[in-house]
Image (cartoon, rainbow, N blue to C red; front, side, top):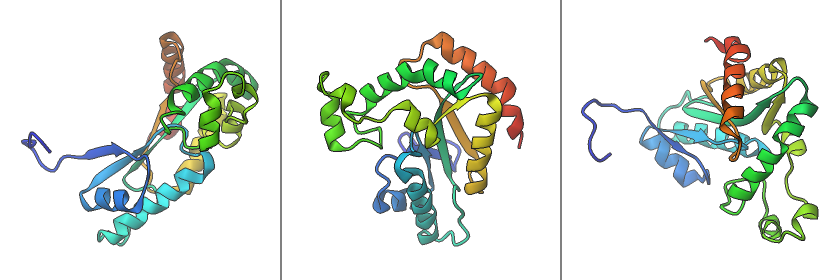
Length: 196
């Protein structure tokens, strides 16, 4: 690192986009931990990166590496009294986020054809683009009452036993007032279920 930190070692984190074996091996070799951003659960991407990073840790000499170790997973979410209300309230934010990050290939569920369709306002509405309903079904977007989100996050915790960090955020374009309200609600009713 430049400039060299005064105190070593320094915990380093970086986003994982491609998740190639070469990239994961580099990260594991140099002790760099990985951040998987919102929406990675789609298309099984999270599973392949979890396995790939664990395997890279093993190749770098950490023979007892476990799934989730050294990683943080991010989820977009929107708390609401019901799943249906959450979908209705967050639908526009989800779509704006897709428009922003899809063409940059940062929305993993998109094919080349779908990215092309996004650029054509006549084809986009019927172009088979990802939607919030599918994302909620795949648990790539968490919505509904606090109990449901707790249950979903507990499921992730059980599937990846060494995962110690989960990040939550909102899609690009969500108003600050909504984000503030949502974070306060999440802090009061979801976080206490994860004290350890």
